[in-house]
Length: 432
Image (cartoon, rainbow, N blue to C red; front, side):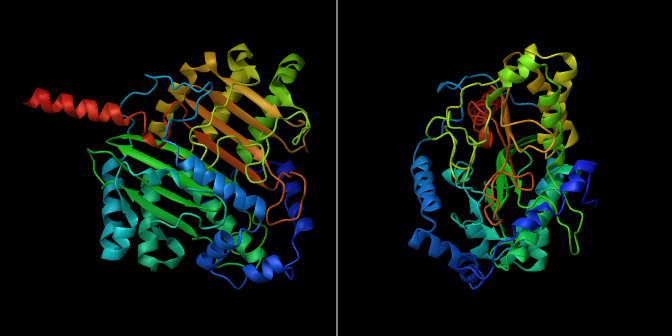
């Protein structure tokens, strides 16, 4: 399986830039971290409250989790009737077979820890930092090789080949980061949790969550339909330049296409799209930036956030620019297999009359930036971040966060669940 796809010359020139910002591994942060495993690290964080800003964010997340799920909206009101049950060609038999094979490898205690009710609120407790803040399910680096391989087989059966390669790339980069900072027990290729919701079935709804540092996938399945949302994918650095997986690079298409769109727009539309000129702009209202999410609005625990439309309307763009919007959205839908991806793209195009593109930062070739595409049926965000493990105090192109949300109750397949219940009730009445 290829690790590198579409690495332009400018990206190649940036490789290795992150090495100017390697941390001092003799500092207390890293000498302490290097002595801990993931559970000790999380316990020390939760009990000690360090660093204070991240601990405060964690406490805020727990408050947000207490809110009943509503869904991300642009105005605080969920719009009904946006999503339908349909055949999306998901290979459900193969996915169920892979999940059943995984279950067969689990001990009773592992299965009890892994399997939750389909409607469990624990769907919402994923997070993308390296801290194991919600320790549910099974953690891959604590499993036998056969069970770990069985988990990965579930991912491979569900995702497109290129989506699976992207996920594996994110995992390998996380392992590379763990080696860079000397803490492989906390950050490694398999420091991810897997959780089942419901029972694998070709006819009834179920799903799973796969989450850890810089890779979080929430996948709801019903017959041949899938909702892969919310998901988060990131990398620091976003390239491996040494070792077994040297050359691995992810998120370059999302970066390249977003910049190409912004640079291609005419000046008036660039001005409309650029909602803030600086990545941490004094004009930003309180709360528009925070240490963890930085410019992201729809990250972990932000299931009910109100995100007003900003920027330039896609409907007002020239056809060539709308093609670039489509290419960006295709890149964000890469986790879906081809048939399901085509069905989702058809839905996204149908809402181009109410789709907006916004930008934060400059847009020269070397400038870090943020962008968002938003409509009633999708939100995608891209953000260049400052260092978390690396020492760059300003955002840099070698630390990237991306995410996708399905607003108006679409995340976790929530908008489909009443339709499924209704269709099953009608079938029962008809058969009766």
